[in-house]
Length: 172
Ligand SMILES: CC(C)(COP(=O)(O)OP(=O)(O)OC[C@H]1O[C@@H](n2cnc3c(N)ncnc32)[C@H](O)[C@@H]1OP(=O)(O)O)[C@@H](O)C(=O)NCCC(=O)NCCS
Image 1 (cartoon, rainbow, N blue to C red):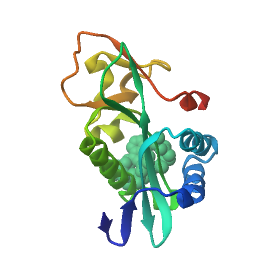
Image 2 (cartoon, rainbow, N blue to C red):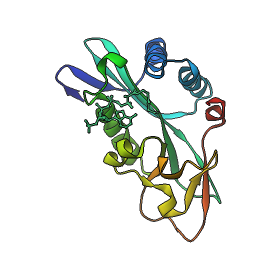
Image 3 (cartoon, protein in one colour):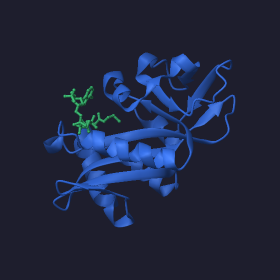
């Protein structure tokens, strides 16, 4: 996808250094970059996209597999991290890369996509409070900040917890 010199594309191995630097800069610490590096090392990233502007990597988002208890069939994904270069925030780059990432997930038949983040930001992409579908994050009670997009065919009579890849446990 290309718009105003902005390219959204797949991530190659030779992008890893630039993506790591971007993620560290966005979060102002290295924890999230280390998370992404561990996900890469373990082959746990299912889908990811970056935004390039003038040859510079300025945006990134990743989707990794999550699991449900009790179990749920199908492709279940967690969005995160999402990062935009501090100098380029507030210009729609986060929105563009998330939308493109969600499109890829949906094209691949994702049944559920979870996110832990600012409700006001993620609701614009269609993420609804997971509690509405009796789902919660296994980490801690994140309330309204734990949100999902689902395919609409999930039996909501069951109460479920959603577990991210263990690499996320290292984040504080
Ligand atoms: C959060 C982040 C990815 C958003 O990307 P962005 O390109 O700056 O955001 P966009 O330009 O697409 O969207 C801007 C809108 O989002 C809102 N927004 C941005 N960050 C927000 C946040 N943390 N909480 C709530 N709203 C936020 C802005 O107020 C703005 O709202 P408006 O459209 O009503 O004016 C980016 O700011 C970032 O990398 N932050 C640091 C890392 C982080 O917190 N990542 C998310 C957690 S995984």
